[in-house]
Length: 152
Image (cartoon, rainbow, N blue to C red; front, side, top):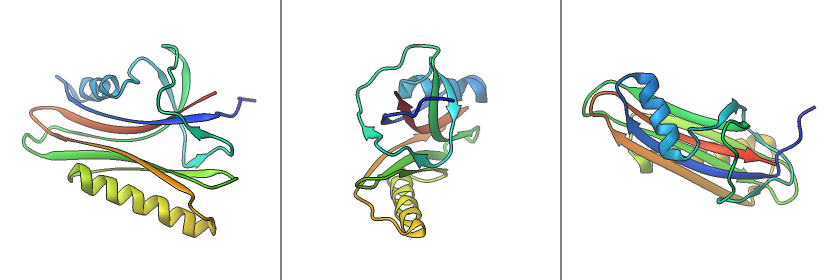
């Protein structure tokens, strides 16, 4: 059985690359998580998990992460990604991710609305909401990524 993460941080990055995968990898690097082995998780923040924006994770670590990203090869197109984390007072929280052809502010607003709706759907009270977003204007091959990185 895997341990339960106790802390979470939100990161975002955008970049160009010579291929779609390189653009994605460069966005991971820009977000500060390019040297981790991400284990993609869905939308539940474990009970007791706290926002701690400055923890570090050893390179190569298997790292639970919820993320949204968009890669595009349409020059001039604006792409964006956002991550939102909703915290309850004493129980589990909810993570939502969004990516789309929009501005950073539009992506941030959309993901915040998604977190609020997730709390309503669960009949839970939202205590705190954190959002991180990024936008990028594509030159050749661009990527935008936003992630909630969890650790122990």
